[in-house]
Each structure stands twice: as C-alpha cells, then as structure tokens.
Amino acid sequence: MAQLWGGRFTKETDKLVYDFNASISFDKKFFEQDIEGSIAHVVMMEKQGILTCEEKDAIVKGLTGIRRDVEEGSLSVTEEYEDIHSFMEANLIERIGDTGKKLHTGRSRNDQVALDMKLYVRGQVLQVSDSLKDLLETLLSIMENNLTTYMPGFTHLQKAQPTTLAHHMGAYFEMFKRDVLRLGDIYKRMNYCPLGAGAFAGTTYPLDRSYTSSLMGFEGPTINSMDSVADRDYVIEFLAALSTIMMHLSRFCEEIIIWNSNEYRFVEIDDGFSTGSSIMPQKKNPDIAELVRGKTGRVYGALVSILTTMKGLPLAYNKDMQEDKEVTFDAIETVKNCLVLFNGMLSTMKFNKKIMEESAMKGFTNATDAADYLVNKGVPFRDAHGIIGQLVLYCIEKNSPIDHLSIEELKKFSSLFEGDVYDAISLKTCVEKRLTMGAPSKKAMEEAIRMNKEFLAHM
Ligand code: ARG
Image (cartoon, rainbow, N blue to C red; front, top):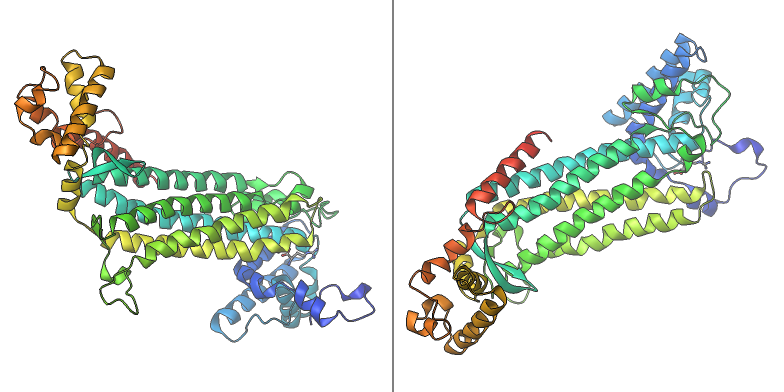
C-alpha cells in the first residue's frame, strides 16, 4: 500500500478501506495525461523560478523514462498504488531521488485529476467526432447512389407518402451532423485548464497558469479555482451528447430491424453482420442492430449516474467525484464500438430497391397527390380530402391502387378527373414534384447533398 499522505496517520489503513478508496484500477487510463500535465507543470515552474533548470530537466527525463518503460513493457502500472498520481510520483522519486519530491509543488491531486479527466475527455470528444465522420461518409454515399430509389415514407409506422432512400438517409445525416456540431460546442466550452487551482484556493507560488494552459493547447486557464476542481459539467455534457448519438443510432437500428424483417424485406444485412439461431436453422438475426439499440440504455445510465452523483455535492472537491470515471469510460467505449459496428453493418447492407419501390406503390401513398390534383382543378382542399377518402375506401374494397382504376370509375367520385391524372399521381411524379428545400425530389436532394459535402469537407 503506497500512499502519498501517511504523515498525519498513526495507524495503517484497513485493507478493505484501502481497496474501496483506491482508483488505480481505472484511473491508470490517465497514464499519458498525467505525464503530459506534470511536464507542463514543471516546465512552467522552471520558467517562474520555482524550480531550477536542472531540477526541471531531471523531472522531465524521469517522467519520459517512466513513459518509455511502460510502453516497452519493462515497467507496469500495478495496483499497489492508490491512484495513477501516486504511481507516477513514487516511480519518479525512485528513479531520480529527492528532486522527484518537488514535482507536486503548487499542485493538489484535486486540480491534477481535474486536468487528467479533462485532457482525456477532450481527446475522446475528437475521437467520437472522427467516428461520426466515417458514418456521415457512408450515409452520403448511400444518398448519392439512391436519389431515385423510391420507398414509402411512414408516419405512425403507416405508409404515408412516397419518398426516396436518399431522403430517408438524409434525415439521419442531419441527426449525426448535429451530433458532430454538438461535440464541437462542448469542446470549445470545456477547453479551459484547471491546473494551478490547487486544492481549491489556488497557491502562494507564482504559477503562470496561462503559460501552463497554452502548453497543453487550452484556450486559457479556468477563472475560478474553486469551480476548477469541482466542475464536471463537461463530463455531463459529453455524456448527454453520447446519449443523443445512441438515441439516433437506436432509432436507426429499430428501422433496420423492421426493414430486415420477413414482412418488409427492404434490406438484407450482410452475413458478416448477422447471427444465426442455435435451434432454428433458417434464422438470420439482426443482432448487431439489436445490441446497439440495447446498449443505448447503458449510455443513458452513465449520464443519469453522474448527474445524480453531482447533484448534492457541496463545493469544492469531494471524493464522490472519483465515481465520474468508470461509467464515463464505459460509455465512451460503448459509443465508439457501436459507431464502428453500425457503420460496418450499414455500409455492407443490401437495399432491395424493387421491394421498396413496390411497397411505395401500395398503401395509397399517392392519396395526398390525388387530392392535390383536384385542388389544382379548383376543388377546395378539404372537399378534395373527403372525395379521395371515399375513393380510397372504394379501392380498399376492390383491393386496387388508385391509379389502377379506369377513368370511368374515377369520374364516379369527381367529374374533374381526366386522363392526365395517372401521370399526376404516379410514384415518380409524387416524389419529383416535391421540390421545396429539404424535400425528396432528386433536384432538392442534389442541393442537400452539395451542402452535406461542404460540411464534410470542413470537418
Ligand atoms: N482518485 C481521485 C479522484 O479520482 C483523485 C483525487 C484525490 N484527491 C483527494 N483529495 N483525495 O477524484
């Protein structure tokens, strides 16, 4: 049991207490961040005359030596230390002697861990954003290849109006684009350096906090030292963004599961991304989509967990905050894995274009356009709606689409129907006449694709 704080104590810590309190089993993830922060700290202290140049060099050499040895495998981060900070300091002192004891000058583990967590989360924000970019590229390529792949659009999971696969994928493009933008906002807001806040009240050493923060690529130092060690808002914001990403993935998975069902057969998931049944030989299950949908609960759980941990904490640091790590690490890993797997599944998935198009032709998805046809001939919309409603009822009884009726049959409902109605309510017309910005016509979608490409180019 290696502790940094034995001086005041007369008794050994109970073993159970030690284990309960220790965090090295998970905060060893901060190995790199802890070294980066310590190097910035000593470089600044030398500039400020708190350490001599020799002392700074010795500490930097010691820390980079630890990094090298761990990377090469000759040293490992073992659990005999309370946390990663203790591991680092103990190893440094062992390596370079008493000079190592100066590393922690003007620093507390409170601002140290606040920095490590921030550096870690900051890096992960970028990694998740990169994974989202891969997914956006997949979506864009499906869009470009399916501008006239017609399919039904749904409301209440009932066929509503025809659309295209490009349009449907474009909806997800917007969602994941917002996720990328959200991560960018979080990055900007969190990018302030807490190091130098000390335990919570700053320090009497003449630290140059602006310099330390610039060494690590921060926008500047945090403004209030009490807030600096007590703030985990950025973790909560990141978990909220991750939860939103999972919500989007989960909705997408739900649709893929429906589309992949025997009843729909809109898509076929690649064998490499499907699984079988141990009893039913015919089965090919969408397990990856189901698992991604399922793991959404776990990421929401992390968000609620930290919100709950933080809600009753008095200022400034409290040990409760050590609980921020494990769930956050788990949520990040989960989202990164889900994004990679989902992207793999989506990019290898086959769309059964013929089945999708046939489905769009059934279910009266052109009923709105049939009403609009009458409106164009002078019928008020509400009356046209009523006429087409009766027409649909007739078609249901006859088991026929509207455009399979003869003109004589159509005229029974309104004398205004003419031969041009068939073209006016054809699947192609229904889609291609929808030209408003954001609508499914090829023309409108080409503009959306142009904008999306520009977004990706500047990401
Ligand atoms: N392991 C601790 C954490 O994760 C490090 C900070 C400890 N500070 C303290 N005053 N006990 O929060």
